[in-house]
Length: 308
Ligand code: NAD
Image (cartoon, rainbow, N blue to C red):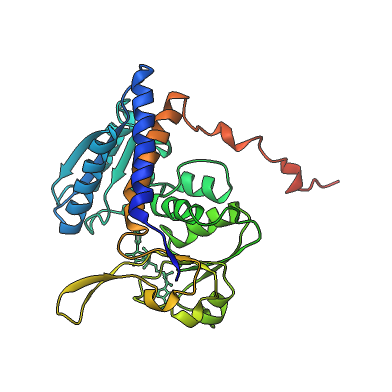
């Protein structure tokens, strides 16, 4: 039988560590870290997520600042709110809940967040930092996935990892994190041919396709580690709604370890958001990531030639 990785327990432990860090900061006379959550409109699922995030803040001692704006808020007004939060020294993390109403360009808004306060890790500067391995804030779900893998694998060097799904919020960042840990990474997607064969070679499978029970037993080699990121709501045989992952859980019991849905990756996301907020607060106390971290400018003579 495969071990079941208990995401709730790992998230609880991470929350305890985050709370301990907050307590240490307060004891050292530093300001309490603050997270601003901006919600535009009244999308039901977004309201639930925002409530959970605010509850998470209370649990670990982070101050939460809530900005609820009407659905018809203009992009300019939303950008003004982001600018105000960027300038507020009591706000260490800013999270703009997506999806945003259609008249607002999400990319423009997320790019307006100060990269040092971008606790979701979606700002192009943080995406660049992640892909070049130069620090920055790592997106919450991919960070949670790595922490779950770390509970069952000591060293990823040279292991074969297959990521199913290439989204900007899960697939691509998790592939970068696995590469950083010296795994050999194959990123696959809906147009990948022979996916079962590719998956069968993997020591680690990260399934983030949003395709219910896509990964069958015969896709998985003995002893693999499987992280199931997918969450889809379907109607069960009993007529009740249930959540299913991207992995046919009952068929993969020959794996070394697998995450359940629910109770695997899901609980890690908010725990990582809180951890990111405290990390952001500490970075800001030290003067921010700034742009000095990039090292010296490249020698341009490498890219240009002078005519004789
Ligand atoms: P997305 O829709 O942006 O991307 C899906 C990716 O999977 C695409 O690259 C697509 O090419 C690929 N894909 C889709 N069907 C496939 C198939 N049949 N075979 C191979 N590849 C396929 O999705 P996303 O935002 O990355 O989310 C993926 C899943 O993870 C969803 O179920 C989502 O709900 C879940 N999710 C969970 C959490 C969490 O647990 N906190 C966070 C983010 C996403």
